[in-house]
Length: 83
Image 1 (cartoon, helix red, strand yellow):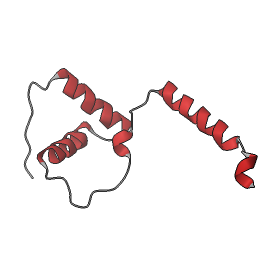
Image 2 (spheres, one colour):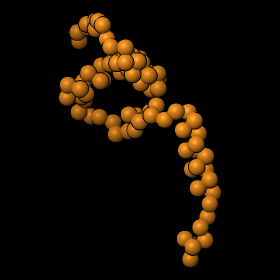
Image 3 (cartoon, helix red, strand yellow):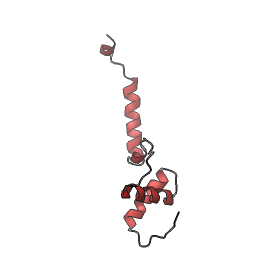
């Protein structure tokens, strides 16, 4: 494999790559390589089917709000459903 250095990366691009790397607990290098492969249409053929692309989409408060809602809804029993 070859290596190269990418100069003058847009601040927003760098920020987003860094956020994805942190949220997936992986390196910036790994994220950048994956984004390049996917963008060029040469991504691995045996792609995992997962929800990793959704990681980091909600703030912590939004996640907590969702968790509270799910807890409440799963505790609620609708007697009509059991007739």
